[in-house]
Structure formats: C-alpha cells, structure tokens
Amino acid sequence: RADVAPTGLEAGGAAGAEWLLRDLGARVEQAAERTNRHLVALLMERFALREHCLALRRFLLLGQGDFAEGLMNLAAPELGRAAAEVQKHQLAGIVDMAVRQSNAQFCPPDVLARLGVRLLAPSAGERGWDVFLLDYAIDSPLHVVFTAAAVRQYSRAFAFLWRLRRVSHALAGCWSQHMALQRHLVSCGPQLGARAPELGLEMRQTLHRCTCLRNEMQHFVQNVCSHIMCEVLETSWAKLQAGWRACADLDEVVLEHQRYLERIEEGAFLSPKAEPIFTQLSALFGLALEFTELHDQVCASAFEAVDVFLREPEGLAPFARSLAECRAQLDQLGAGFLVRLQALLRALEAQPALRRLSSDLRFLLSRLDFNAYYELRRAAPTDRAWPA
Image (cartoon, rainbow, N blue to C red):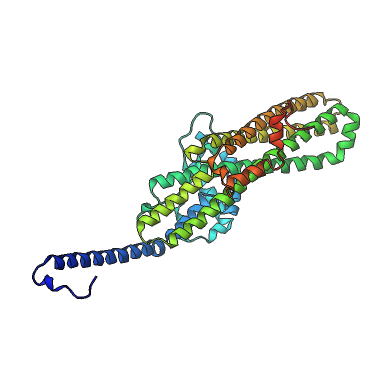
C-alpha cells in the first residue's frame, strides 16, 4: 500500500475508499497473525501442550518402556481375574507403584496427577485384560487439541499396544518357565530316559514342539512390535514436532495433531481400510495367548511327572498320555497359526502402500518372511505345523 493517502480521499473519491479498505485489511491481518502466534505460544509454554502430548505418548502409547514392563508385571495377577471382579482402585494403586518403580517418576507432578485408570463395561467371559485402559485427564484449554474424538483414538491405540505387549510378555514368560524346567530335568533326565523311556520320549518331543512354536510366535510378535514402536510411533512423533514448530495459528496446531493420530492409526493397522490386517493380527494374538496357556499345562505336567518319578517310578503312564494330548493340541495350534499368518501376509501384500519402494510395510513384510519360508509353505502345504 502507499504510505500517503491519495488526494482523492479528501474528496471522498473511490480511490481513497479502496486505499482505506486495503489498509484496514492489512492491519487486521497483522493483528490476527500476532494474536495467533501469541495463542500458539501460550498453549505451548504456559499450558505445556508439548509436555502433555509427550505424556500421552509415554503412557497411553507405551513409549515409556520401563513403566510399561513394570505395569505388566505388577498388574498381571489382578488383570487375570474375571472382569467383573477387577477393582479400579486396586489398579490405580498398581499404576502408581509402576510409576514410582520406573523413570516415569521424574515426570512433572501435574502430568502424573492426570494419569489414571478406566475400566470398560465388562461382558460375559471377559477378564481384566479386556477392560483395562489407562486414562489421562484433559481440561481446558487443552481439550481444544485433545478433543473427545482424539482421546478415543488414544484409547483404541492403547488397547491394541497393551495387548501386543501382553502377548510379548507372556511368550517371554514361557521361555523362562521352559528354562526352569530344563534345569530341573538335568539332574534326573538320564534316569528318566532309562527307567521310563516312553515318558522321556514324549517329554522331549512335546518340549521340542513348544520351543519351535514359541520361537515362531516370538519372531512374529517382535517384528510387529518393532515396526509399530519404531517405524510408526517414533516417525509420527518426529513429524508432529516438526509440524508444530512451523505452526502459525491454532487451527494448524489442531490439524497437525490430528494428522499425527491418523498416521499412528494407519501405521498400526487401526484405520478402517486396514481392517483385514487388524482382524488377522487379533486372531494371531489370540492364538499366541492360547499357546502360553497350553505351555503352562505342558510344563506343569512335566514338573509333576519328574516329582512322581522321584517318589514312585511306576506311576508315570498317565503323564505320558497327557503329554501326548498336549502335543496334539500344539499341532493344532501351530496349524492355525500358520494359516492366520499366511492370511496376514496376503493382506499386507494387498495394501496399496506396498507399491512404494520406501514403504515401511515392505520392510515389515520382508522381516516377517525374510527367507520366504511362509511363501514356500503356501506353495507346498503340508499337514505338519513345522518340520520335525
């Protein structure tokens, strides 16, 4: 605009009115820009928007690994009960204990005061694992960014990540139990094989099947967990921080946060278009948890068989039959896991994003089937769940 008003302004001319409107519009835009920048700075600094978003990432997205692992260990007995018997105040105390036992204790007091527990309405047959959610209290003005819809997205992501961590934790517990059994067998294994060869053979074969299936499931779970925690959550967080640094108004701040949640949902297979993948993942997690329960039965039978052998070597026939039945169930579980995993690989291959050479899905697919084992099994299926 010109620094000096045109001479037509004194005469009320059209040129003067046009200059006045342009000047007024420019001043309004400048005032709006200053106000928006001040509002963004206020949210980021006075109301600590970044810190609260980081807290949501640490707790509801399980980014604080030591806290998540500690909470899993402490809450397992309570969450293993029927959902209707789980007490919210008990879980709140467990969450507080997990915070104090991890580096999460160094978070700001305002952040820790917002962390809580929410229980979903229980249904028949559900356990505490199925209704437990971590909660984070949101108040004004943070609710402008963390809307009710955004909080629901965080809760859905937590439920999925919590179940993934639960499966990984349960499989790790199977390995620990298996190692304890192996050490227990060292002292009496040779005698057991010599005096009860049928039981010794059944025990070796059953434990071998357990090891093969556990390793296969652990490989799958670790790669899915690595993909989500590194390729999805970490990269989405980096993009959010870069986007927020460039934001000039509140609308852009809200939009960047919504894009952040959408990237997480898409990468973690929680979006509607990834429903086929999510369905297969849920089924695979369920099979892995079934395996951990069956593994507990196998180890319990093996421990009991060794104890009976030390007291009464003649009473071992029932344990041999029990282990043989467990081995048949392991075969069935292994076959079901193979079918579901092959279906997951087909669903991943059908994703449009796989066409991009830089796609994270391409790397996940190559890690899940790095030596084309499942592709070859699909081409030449057999009745066995794994090689002998």
